Image (cartoon, rainbow, N blue to C red; front, side):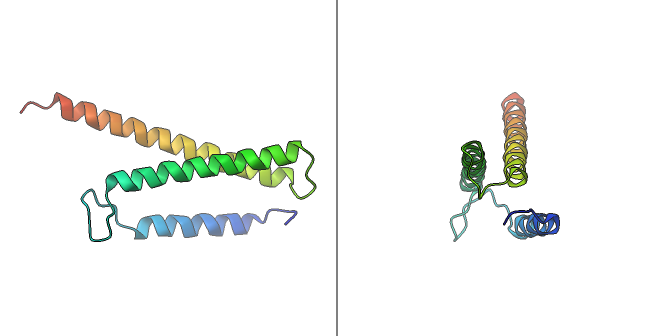
Length: 106
């Protein structure tokens, strides 16, 4: 794949968004064993793998790999950046929620 098809990227993003909306987020364990901590761990692992993939693509491009083009590298780097920023926002909201809970009088 030498060129990136924008419509393909948009359709992939739509598929990921629909999967995210279709999966209910539970804070209590279910018969499937999904809970908040496992979803959070899965999200962190996903961000990590996205960043590793972008790093590998960048290294391949810098090494002169003819199968890697700059557009694909830049898209991968942007995906990694956006996913990391989203994870930072989630972390900030979690810290804020924790602080609010600690301020509650019992």
